[in-house]
Length: 426
Image (cartoon, rainbow, N blue to C red; front, side, top):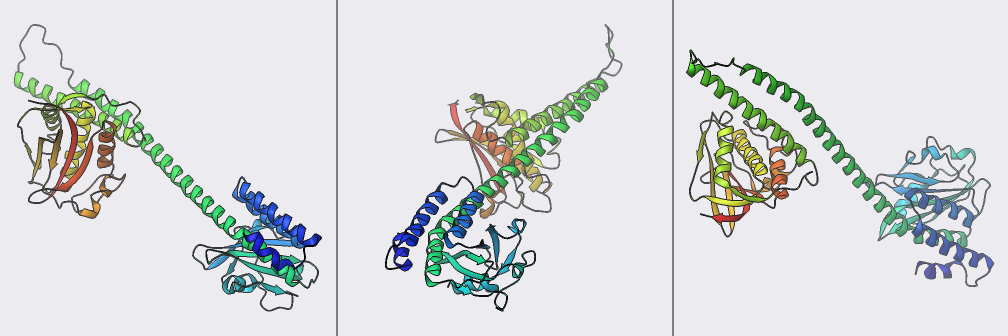
């Protein structure tokens, strides 16, 4: 449609020059829509325009997204080093004025025209004589400006203006769509790189944690390495039993840290390395195991574990325990000391719901989705940590078909709920 509209402006008769121009428009449209890269597209634009207008220099400036400047995007006669660097203020110079007015502009002699703007790094006055500029508009928005310049003075005609305007009309949409695609691909690449860097950093940190954990494990074993009694009774059996209890508790925490490292590594993967092993799991037994292992962490709080009917849920038992650890640790972070943390479970419409409630400040409605994002953490006077726990819990839950959400607790605080398909209710 653009070619059909532009053709009458080229001339009432269709001579060899007009046919050449029409062929050029068709060729540019074909090449521009099949360009493999953004840079290749822009090279096609400037090279084809220069040849069609028999100019010496062609330059394409694109309006920055903030609308303050036009930046050199492609050229075949100026210093290519300035691509992406040379900028013209909107409404200043010939290029800026054309963008502001949205009208073509012909400059017979740029050396004596005060509207011509010298741009540092592009000393065009030394070799440019005449200039023709047209705006590129798309959906009533300025996209950029296309310039054709000559080394010798040249009286650009109305046909020249019409031809360059036809090229501009044809290219505006192609260039803008190509630019949007290029920007979208760049943003996706940046997000991919950020995600890779984040994953690599967490993998590195968690990997480095394994060595001190192994050392702690070894020293803990050595500290508990009492000489065998060999048929005699201990002189202090209660002290010996106490040391053994401390050893077992310390080893439980080392094992817990190992699981935490594994859960962090799993949380940064799109899909956990190993598929979840979903089997009927005794929910009450899992809660009891977790609460017993983290007693030292909740020593400043009152832990209320509510029992009832024995529910079994379809879950990966180790991952369920990790989720419960994350939720209870989160409650400890946000709930003031001497308040109660409640753990309960119930059967609701075929799902076992495990709740972890606290008496902290609660979670505002606008944060109830965000807190499950990686590194999201609300600032409170009690909060501490990296903001990975709830994210890891959600990802671990998703890996075995569970749902995790937060809701207000009664009378105050937050209640985190993990819902799993019920296997049986006894």
